[in-house]
Every structure is written in C-alpha cells, then in structure tokens.
Length: 221
Length: 331
Image (cartoon, rainbow over all chains, first blue to last red; front, side):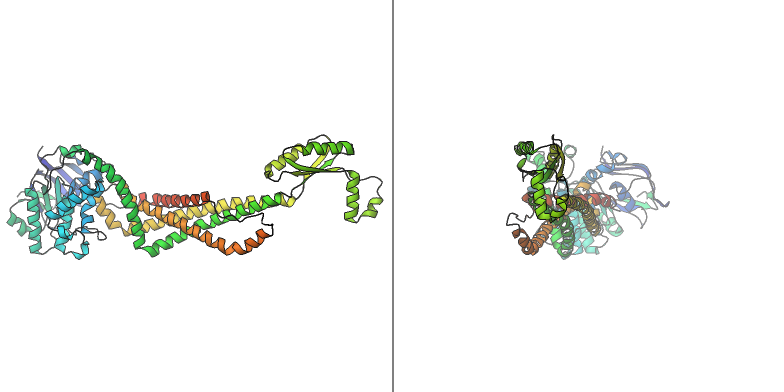
C-alpha cells in the first residue's frame, strides 16, 4: 500500500445543491509532494476538508494512509486528525500563547510529558529557523515568521501527511519562496505533502507534480 | 503508538526516529496528570487576566451562597436559644379525684425515679386551692363553693437535656399512668416557637435550593460567554485533533474556581455580618447569664460551604459546556 491519499470517484454536494467535487479520483504516493491548483471555487478547499474530516463526501471513498474515512466515527476524528499536519492561510495561531506553547499544542493535546514536549518543540522550531523566538508572542512576528510557526506546529508531532491550504496566500513572493523551500526540505526528509495554492508561477518553477481542479473536475496535468 | 511504529517510512524531521521505550510508554500517563495540574493553574490565570468580570461573577455567587448559609447560622443559634428555654419546661399531671394525698405523693416519687425526669412536686387539691386563693384574689368566690374544684397535681420537670420529641413521648406515657386524668405541657408558646423554627428551616432549604439553581445559571452563562469569546481557539484545537474532553477541561476548572472563590467570598460576607451583629447579639446572650454562646459556622459547615460552591460551579459549567462545544466545529 503506497498511496497516502486515495480518492475514488468522490462527489461532494453541499446543502443547497452546490456541487464542489464531481467525481474526483486521485492518488498521492507516500513520500510524494503535490500542488493542488485551480481557480477560486474549483474545489481545492473542499478536497482538503474531506481529507481533514471537516466535511464528509456525498458519495465515493476517501482512503488516507490505509484508513477508509467513511469508517471513522465522530468520536474517532480527534485521534485521526492528530496524525495530520494542517497548515492554514491565516496561520491559525493562538495569540495569547508564546511561540513555544503554540508549537507544543499538538503534543499537549496528545498528552506527552514535559521533557518530551520541550525536546520536540525545539527540534521543530529549529527546522523552521525560529529557535531564538520561542519566548515571543505571535503578534510580535512577521507574517512569514507566523507561518513558519504554523509549519513547526504541523510537523512537531511528525505527521504522515502535511496538508497546507494556501500557505503563502498572505505572503509576498520572497517570503512565499522561503516557505515553499521549507516544504521542499520537509518533503526531502520523507513527509508526504499536499499544498493547495494560487501561486502557479512558483509551483511551475519548483517542478513538483500539479493536480489541477476545474469546477469540481480533475484536469490531467 | 502501535500504528505509528508500523510506518517506518514516516519522516522524522531533524530529530531521531520515535522508538518505543518504557519512558515513552509512561509519558502519556505522567502527561495526563501534569496536564490536569497545568490546566487548573492555567484556568486560574485566565480568570485573573479578566479579573473584573471574574470578580463580579464570583461576587454574585458569593451573595447567593451567603444568604441561605446566613439563614442557617441564624437558625442554629435560635435553636440553641430555644433549647435553653426548654429547661424551663414543666408538665402538669392532673390526678383523678379518687386519688388521695398519700397515693398521690407515692406516684410523684415513683415518677421522680425515672431517668428522664429531673424532679417532681406533688400539690394536693387542698394546697392547690390555698395557692390559688392567695395568688388569684378570687378568695371570696372560692369560699362560696361547696367542694374544692381543683384536682391534685404533680408538677414534673423533665431532664433539661432531653430532646423535645422525647418530652412529648414522656407526656403520653405519664398520661397513661393509673390515677392520672390528664397531662399537660406548660408553655404552649414554646411549641409555637418550634413550629416557627421548622418553618424557617424549611424556608432556608427552599431559598437555598432556588439560589443554587441561580448559581448554576450564573456559572453556566459566564462559561457560555467565555466559550463564545474563545470560539476561534476552540476551532483551532479541534483542527489539531483535540478531543472534546481536552477542550472541556479548562472550562470545567474555571467552573471549579468560580465556585471555590464564590464560596470563600460567601464565608467572608458571613463573617462581616457576624461582626456587625456581634454587639447586639452579645447583649442578648448576656441577658441569659452567659449560658449562651453565639455560634458561627462550624468547621464542618465551612467545608460543606466550600464543597457546595465547588460542586455548583462545576455542575453549572458541565451543564453548559457540552452543548456549547458541540455547536463549534471547524469550517
């Protein structure tokens, strides 16, 4: 089983009749990095939400790391999400906590011991180059730094899949390139990554696989 | 753990691969305890950060708890007061006319031998008439009577420490004695006082119950606002895989602190009332020859108060938090 993500003929229809995904089948191999592109409303976010179990498909099957998500009960969702690394356009940091505490959150949620948490948080902050900022609060950081905190938080518990939804949407081109390089490094270390983005020129320069969505359909590319 | 170890290809970023060792297995258990401790302190810190709003909430809780507790203290004091009046209680046994002086005296002695009786005094019909003649001023009218209309009486004083229910039983028992026509407890007013006290006791319960419900609503509403204010944070936590129990925990601890601090405030309020009332109450107790002491809340009472506060705070929170948290899902 080498697929980390497998969509089989997935249809997602929202209440009100809007069809966001119309029969999508796709695969992401373990250790692969791919970019999900398409115009606004093409279904990128919906696809991400289905993987994160924020939404359920109307029809079809989503299998993540060998787990058929249709069989994951509501009460099992927290455990399932703990194994994903989610990265958001607006970073979703908690502003009343330090950088360290933000990155530690997934480990605190999983109930790890103090020493373990400190060691892993420092390793993750080192990866994104923010080790010296651990005592700062997110407001004092630039947008690029905030997103790197978000990435540290996503990788701190060593997820099998990183999902990033428009991670550079609020950043200028130079910072965006920085963040993308960071993803490249994480991928080289072996993590499977799926990134939804508008930054098409950046994607083309990097040369990774591109999954194009158009009005809920997959375009081959 | 098991599932993780099955995916060896999984990446490790800049750190060593996770291995299962005794320490990594024990970590979650340790983490659980320390997570609770941390949560307890953190929730206190949160309340401290918004201390004006927190203080207002705890103050309302404090007043709501202080009212029934104050009523309870008042009642226990009145109760001890009435216990001392109780010492003055006497019962009169009216004897049948057929009982002569000698057997009346014998009966009085027999009753005095009982454990429950402190002393008895026999008053013959003749002596009673003399007494009445002197004290009532109806001497002339009494002289006009051919027979002595008064029965012989045995005045029974029960042991002072006897509970009032047993005094009633004693009375019924004495009435059934041969030669006794009727037994009567003096001081019907005492019975009325007891009735008033039991009405007060019941009111204290009812008021306590109503105010407890109020505390539940106050805490529930405060927590509801707290959850609304932290909506985004809760969504993020859910996205990161936090269970409902994990998200609920700090709110439950907030409920705990609200209740505890509220109860402490209630105790302080009671103390303040006690000090304010000390002088007039002191004068009242002195009039009872110092036989009475004013009682505040006992140590057990203080514990009950703190326990009630914590219990209500926690419950008020638990009743709200599940419903509100379920309504918050990441979009």
